[in-house]
Image (cartoon, rainbow over all chains, first blue to last red; front, side, top):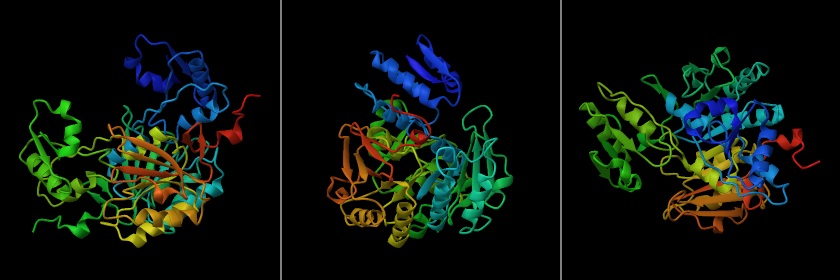
Length: 221
Length: 221
């Protein structure tokens, strides 16, 4: 059977024909994982569906943490998927050709000073930076604070890509600059990618060169 | 038509039936991308195949860099895929539940001091660290140097996962510790994931808690 958040199950409706399905509301992650484990404990084969890749900022870890407390935990297999960082990078061009960090700006489960320290370290060491959970209705100031921390190390003109609702009907792709980032349209379904010192915009796409240009002649002779 | 490195094309042989295919040897990335662009320039629809996700340390960027020098560059679409970090995380458990960095240890295109600075920054800011290109026949000392830099900030017992040839017949999954990392079997097809200060081994799987345990009761009452 299949367990998951209703919105995600709706996206894969054609795959669910003939299956027993339990859809749940948003923000019930712990209950949802517990329920999937309980059903598996009864001997069923249960698929717990989440958005993106279950292994990146998603529910795989919670399942293992909850299973740890069971007398007879079921066998658990994680099936990888296309995470927001994979999907958004592809839509923007090729921003993740070199070393990068993923940082969530949500301070619901992580203290802000920890997030701040990671932003500063990533900016100073010239990582491309993928920002998860950049803004929500209640968390509005974090993206501006992140911009200020990164801009202490990088030019205001650094390319920034924003993808909202990747590969859904309402998908939006936006290229802007680090300076203008806080004014951009960013919501709960957005992922932000901040370029490193080498990232350029080539023909409207965001590209971080890997370094081939230093070793091979890329321009015609 | 389809252009790619022979080994990767062999992996998708069933998908190539009836298609025109141009397979090339290893290490010919620039020639391969140039050839794909030339064929597209002749009006063909060309798929350039690479391993993992073309957008993560792969060939998407090179294609844009080469296309920049063309008078009439073809339309380019990047199709995202399961990168080594997605696949290896899933096989190890759930190590990427929290902020992480990807760092390539290959100093063929990147100077070692840049790599060293990124390792130190990632270690100090408590990122989970994914190491790409950890070792090859000719690059043997980098993994030990990386271990030393990270261990200056993290306990020797920090969990480390190593996946070699993910999802191929010869796949190997190994859990070890930061201290023992340089002695582990690591090759050109390996990806290494170093845990952060919260990463634990739960039932033989590598798990980085997201922080739900601080907010919700995960153990039974």
